[in-house]
Length: 295
Image 1: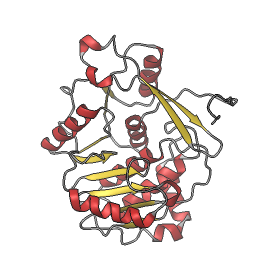
Image 2 (image 1 turned 180 degrees about the vertical axis):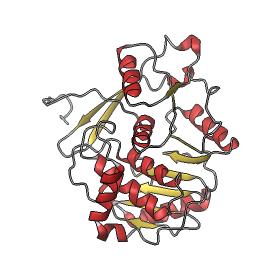
Image 3 (image 1 turned 90 degrees about the vertical axis):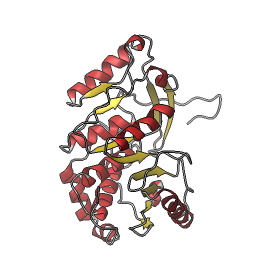
């Protein structure tokens, strides 16, 4: 990135489907899971048309929870992501802060669903959606809900990174942090720390550090956490052992880093399983990571 007031040449530019929810839903759909992307209204614009076409081409059903009278006035949310040669990214967004005023949770498709996952980008609506999911009997997987008063229920799954919680590059402090979080909320907690792996556990599964799977190619880290979440949900919905869910999620997240964005080159189930098998030393360290998921 250039210094303030400076200049740097942009080598290439891509327009991609993105966003945490879309990244997660796209991966789950690619792996054969039935999903509904219940999201914010997209508005009416060139970018909105591009997003709807991209979702339709992937066979992803989109439920825009918009107040009908506000559809035209909604600003299409767009995020500019600047990726540097080391794979790191810096983001600038437009249209996100005003989304909540146009949102209507009325049409949420609770019936027939088993899992609900969300992130608190829309401060009030996201938290209310979690409460409604809970009251409708869905299992919840929460991403980046870090406020003390967040609706994190006992038995739910919680994931975040050291971008938002815990301590960067300090495994011991993160183990203590996750233990305290688990004691407070009774959830299964996962706190990732980039190349340092992650800390995970619950009241039933000992909280400890897990190593990362190696990334064969590092192009862009955007969406790695979303693919981790998708991998966890893929396994949890199938009743896998917790250790197997963690393996799959971790391997999926690291393989995502081989391409720009998180929706154009989703690693296949076969690729993820092969990567796990080829890195036996790392995989074995996930053993004793807990019993079968109970939801």
